[in-house]
Length: 83
Image (cartoon, rainbow, N blue to C red; front, side):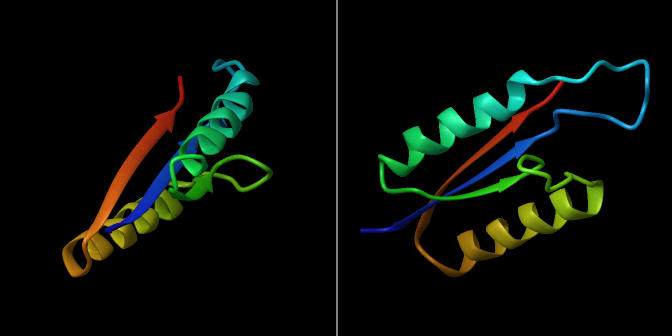
């Protein structure tokens, strides 16, 4: 069976003060993580639990999962929870 991996990116807060904080995103990512793990996905999260989702970190994570897709028979899932 192919490996299953998921990349979940949450952006609960922005550097721009006119964009309000989005506290529900933490819960969204946690619930989706549990659901995917129950379906045998290895889940990587970015932007929650104090790990800021900078543009560079997001691009690197997407590039890494895309490289793995090309090299291996994996099933992937990507989710971005944002404003």
